[in-house]
Amino acid sequence: MQPIPTEFDTPTYRDVLAQLDAAAEWLSLDRNIWGRLRLPQRALCVTMPIRMDNGDVCVYQGFRVQHDSSLGPTKGGVRYHLGVDLGEVAALAMNMTWKCALVGLPYGGAKGGIRCNPKEMSRGELQRLTRRYTAEILPLIGPDHDIPAPDVGTNEQVMAWMMDTYSQQRGYAVPGVVTGKPICIGGSLGREEATGRGVVYITIEVLKHLGIEAKGTTAVVQGIGNVGSVAARFLCSAGIKVTGISDSSCGVYNSHGLDITDVISYKRSRYTLEGYPGAEMITNEALLELECTILVPSALSGQITEDNAKRLRCRMIVEGANNPTTRGADEILRERGIFVVPDILANSGGVIVSYFEWVQDLQKYFWKEKEINERLHEVITTAFNKVLEFSTSENIDMRKASMANAIKRLADAHLVRGLYP
Ligand code: GLU
Image (tube, rainbow, N blue to C red):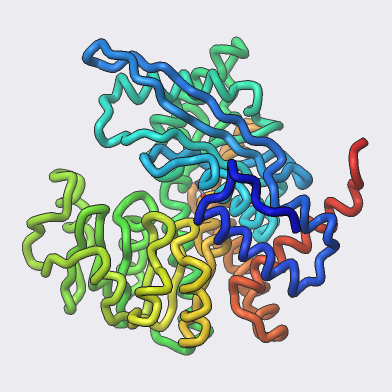
């Protein structure tokens, strides 16, 4: 195989590539297709001069990467974070390709990002940055081409600005250009909660498989953003005791179970978990090592490493975040018999309901929330059980089984479409 081009060569890209290589080798994948899938189809780097509130002009860097469009338009979130670089965005775009293929959506994978700290920016600065970024990537996006969505550091307001900027250029409203937007401009009921909801649907399937009673069992959630907070809430509704949860600066722990609604409202009003009464404060590192049945990493990538994997005291991991587990850690978890549901399956609820949103926008016909949640349940549990069956019959772990299923679908599409020209 060709060496990784220096532009993409980052730890996250190497981890994602290692997962592809392991599954491709196991599948004895056609080497031409394998080589093709190791690199993204398109990558755009942009820079954006933004007028800050104090009058200065600050130049930001952004990216949009489309990994593979053989199954349909590309799809994937936009991330605002200081750690964003081309290699990370390319890795996450590749992840989206596998995710969409695995759960049977007619999409390829894409990802976008801006290197910035949205927490330190005013609403006006964020709006100007988002609009200029959208203008810069305009040639690449569109409802039939590439459809952005929220990711780390972005939300439905950011999507509304993207939709508006794109629509202003076209001269009419184009709701299908982004998903995860507010309901009043064509967003879907259930989209905001979809990723966390999907994580819990999967968790319940794993508990059934392992023969563990949900009621009274314990869970620890890393992250209290869109995915972590919703997952924690629904875990509690399923009778599971959430004993620990964290934000980017610290975690809270209570062996009797936390009052999650209260923790979330504390975080919302004070923007931090620090000082939360009725729980012990712990570090994010210690939180991951708490004894529990279910561990849900739903923050950033690279959290479960070769170093801490041997100290984890959970029975199963449901990856709410993208790439939370490094390659080396994965092997340790496998040896230790910890059941891991990989990100491309565990957090696919978001893009599944994004797909429903896009379909509703294109048809201009909107569904009831109950129908959306039922369809999400059906798609995600069917995919989970298919992967579980495959992993059992082939005696491989859930990550390899997920990757193999996804890659097989892409390989079929590439083979039958052939090469252009
Ligand atoms: N950013 C989410 C993900 O990583 C959602 C992507 C989407 O809805 O297009 O899956």
